[in-house]
Amino acid sequence: MNQEELFKNVISHSKEYGFIFQSSEIYDGLSAVYDYGQLGVELKKNLRDFWWKSMVQMHANIVGIDAAIFMHPTTWKASGHVDAFNDPLIDNKDSKKRYRADVLIEDYIAKINAKADKEVEKAKAKFGESFDEVLYRQTNTRVLESINKAAQIEARFKEALEQNNLEEVRQIIIDCEIACPISGTKNWTEVRQFNLMFSTQIGSLSEDSNTIYLRPETAQGIFVNYLNVQKTGRMKIPFGIAQTGKAFRNEIVARQFIFRMREFEQMEMQFFVRPGTEMEWYHYWKDTRMKWHQALGLGENKHKFHDHLKLAHYANAACDIEFEFPFGFKELEGIHSRTDFDLKKHESFSGKKLQYFDPELNESYVPYVVETSIGLDRLFLAVMSQAYMEEKLEDGTSRVVLSIPYALAPIKAAILPLVNKDGLPEKADEIVNLLKYDFNVATEAKDAIGKRYRRNDAIGTPFCITVDYDTMENNTVTIRNRDTMTQERVAISDLWTILNRDVSVSNLLKKC
Ligand code: ATP
Image 1 (spheres, helix red, strand yellow):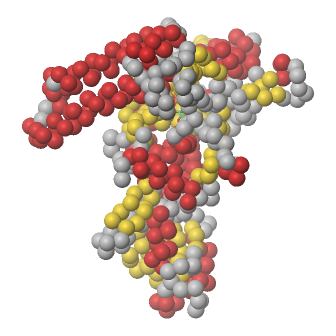
Image 2 (cartoon, protein in one colour; image 1 turned 135 degrees about the vertical axis):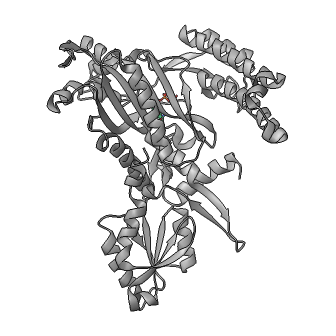
Image 3 (tube, helix red, strand yellow; image 1 turned 90 degrees about the vertical axis):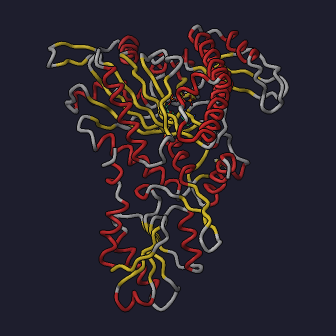
């Protein structure tokens, strides 16, 4: 199964088993909007809870809030979103398709770098143990050519972005001979800026001042509340405020399933620090967040840092944590040192002081902010695409298994009566009643037991607990492990302890 097939399979599997549905499907769907089904909502909630616990519960100096989606319209003037939250767009005149100009160029650069990596891989396979990758990259002409070409385009692109030179961005597309993937032609329009915020009206219509926006990020709800939280929570700098919630962006390149949606969920944390210490905290949060991702066990070398070429108007350092999705390495989380930009702007637009009195320094200042911002839907996609596996078994059959980390699995254990009679279903219900207070468990009596095992493998259930005739005699059951498929006979009275040992989220939290 190549990566393209994997991605297609993840999408169809997500629908078939009730993880993700296209929004309003009966009306042919709404582009780049998705609904989470009965299993998807559980996985999403578990991911959110894991993030929340690792941020809020595990850090004495981080608290959470839940701000409203609607905010005073001046918020978005102050934050710069009204004037500068734009994407550079370009249309292909033949296919009439619209693209983000920056994405076209970045994909092109990634392709050139991938070509160099391929050469290196080939040489590695050829020379084996004695291969010196660093030397090869520095000396092989074909590799050098690709690396230099990519670096040159990158430098030119960076300069064009910094100068906001849209003509030059277009010229790079022309010079690189980038073609529209649909029409195959290089017949491009000018590059234009397009604002990504959705707007609507509050209260009575018509007056201009009644226009409000659906928040394009959750961060501003934290900034405008930072003093409320600091004062009422008696927080001392450095401290953080965490929030999860919906954000909305009128994305133009609306593809790649739940990777880029128009309505999505963010999990953000703003960490307020003393000015001058922000770089120290920026590096702290880079390390901490990378460790968090690795605790999920999605595989080694699946994550990497990518420093931003062009810093956003509010940042003095920024990077992404990228994940290797089936369509390549792409942004999963952003870590930004946002300086005092946002708070200072809110001070000037609101006319209210947003200073913190630092008792240790005996002075007041506007704190600096380091932010970690991750898309919950992208994390969901990362987990699904890494978990989906098609396995050939020893007996010649095959199975699909979702190897979701146990603690995050939608259902932790399926309690399965071997047959649907002779008191076995009632015994299964008893076990459900024993476990349901602490674990999300399910019971299922329909179909042959093998078929039920396969179904539970396909939805990522770590354990299948089977009730058979021996259970009725001696109160023992078999417990089958999703990954190893081995079965063990255990006492019903031990089930709680076994589940608690293996599916508890504290296993993940301890690795962070
Ligand atoms: P991109 O460059 O991919 O558009 P971004 O840099 O605009 O992303 P941020 O503004 O840093 O993204 O938002 C923080 C996080 O929110 C991202 O790392 C991503 O996980 C998530 N996110 C942003 N836009 C979307 C979207 N349209 N759909 C799903 N998740 C998103």
